[in-house]
Length: 636
View (cartoon, helix red, strand yellow):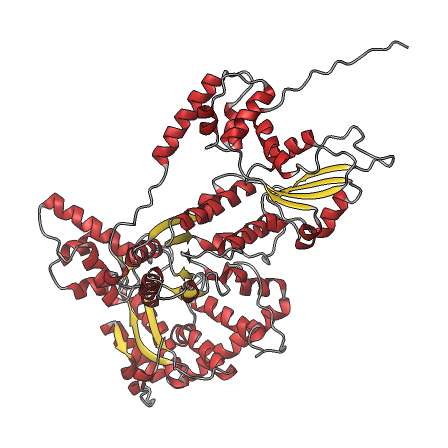
């Protein structure tokens, strides 16, 4: 048998790892030169550096006998990066070790009991210029000066590893770092205040405006040391249909409060890379807001984080880590004094409930589509008051429009006025609006019958107080889902809502298709197919009766999971689907019977709507001979 020898090439020490060894030496000074001593050390290292410090620690406490006779590791260095580990799992990984070093970028991810049992828990500070000088001497790198070392201390390990290649001269690496420093300085955001108007002059924000102005007052009092931070609202979740101006609200809020605005979103954070990069970008936004405090951190598309209890296993671990990271940022141990977080979403139902607890996004406010007065105020704002003509025509032509829709038509009207060298008038605004489709008489009568059914059932059963019922004669082309009719109710303040109230409300929601069945023998597809449709609203309400409020066969409560928790309940429970359908059919038959007895009133109200387009609640109550209610005592 022939023999041969393998000559291993000596591995050159990495410059960054050599610098990291300086920090490990300082943290483990009492242990690393004594191979006979047993210890457990927890080292809290800067974000994004765990792997570098692991390599540095491996080099410092390497053991010539790394395992015992049972092949158990005697020297254990664990890099936990940015991941929380269960205590049992962590202990199993080092239970046979004699010298154990746990490296983590988040100290709270080390179980408290293990931190207490460690011989030493140290925070490893980022390398100083002196450390880089020592590292250069250790690996034999010539040309290092204190000036160059100071320049290097401003960069992350990732950047230095990419630049300080063994095949590249130090002078080339320094030129690259100086150029990068110049570019970073140019790109760095300046802590400036947001430009534009404040909430004081904004319209259509309702309760959100009230909350924002109160926050501005509280922040002024906090800055003047008149109140403690505990007396200031820490956060708010803003929700509403697309185009209602949630981002515009954040800018106006920052202006009213006189503070800096930091804008972020899950999508921006995700663009940074994998989970570790995502969490790092998230913490960077919170750190920036903290640096600019007092400030407002606006997190758009807040529902993107999802719910840790949502179904599906593909992304559950990722989602859990992302939400846990956000919870740590919203409610850190050291607090976030001076930072108010405002989240925005179109769908608040799919948000993890822990994110909405007190001290986090504790206030939830809806921004509705603007009413007529708000639409006119929004128009005046975008046209700076320079519009001539009967604005009532504009208000009636923009029912159901969002603030973004109005802003666009104002912009288009200004463009037309520049091209034609004329003033902005209501006629010009109407011309700038998207193309419309005028309903035929048949479609208009069908819509009138449907809305009359809602109104009469609601008035007779007295579910809530009818404000008005109306139909639109035109529909915008190119809009997939839109309503050409509306029946508006207001809830009575202080009313106890029993199962009878909710059944009456179901009957009202189904009164539209019941009226169509009576008059035409069948109902059209407008009652379904959309999240805001009658049948969708009725299905969700019936589900709540069965599973949320204890009005069904069981008293137990199940709130569901995911973005559509009620749909989730129905999907997984055939019995629930049957119960929901039975309840809906019963209330449909009830509405059908009621309207059949009041066919005269149904025909009269539908005829009035067809001619006038709008009928007030008092007129409908008088038509149905129902006692008038004092609407001043009700609140939406």
